[in-house]
Image (cartoon, rainbow, N blue to C red; front, side):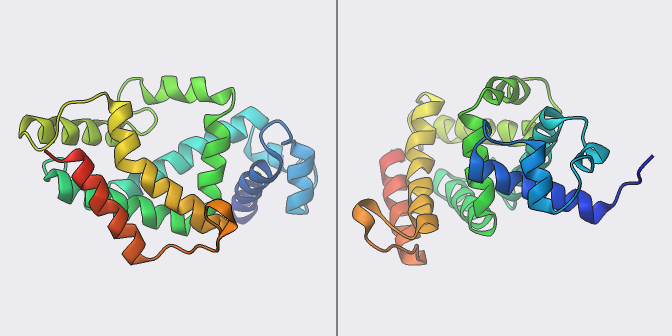
Length: 203
């Protein structure tokens, strides 16, 4: 039986993310992964049962890392502006430090795996990002209860609260804005957009 090599296991995971981003989930194969890693086709099976097991474990591991990053210094009892500012800072830092993962999760969210992970996200405590879901739900409940923000469907809140941030990050990672104009995000641009988001949400 072949022994596990932690460095090789990390390489397999990293190259799997890169390969999925490059080829999409439909074009992702263990053969392509092995070639990208410079290893034999059998090596990934030392760490994962099959392709599905690999993808599920990457999502669970990276989801846990993302949850920890997004909840850093976050207080569900904070005011709307203070709590949202921490969320913007954490999400911005995570996406700047892990640009490939943003594209990886985009692939997952538009694939047949989405339903599987939605069930895990909406399941019992201990499943995918359960602490994040709990803290964000509590935060929204509190700011509505204090009259800082009107009650609204979560999808509306998310679209207003975070879509501008993710649009700016996509422009930044592409290096181009709409029409191909060169673009690089700055603190001034980031927090100018944040101020407008707060005004849109706040009573």
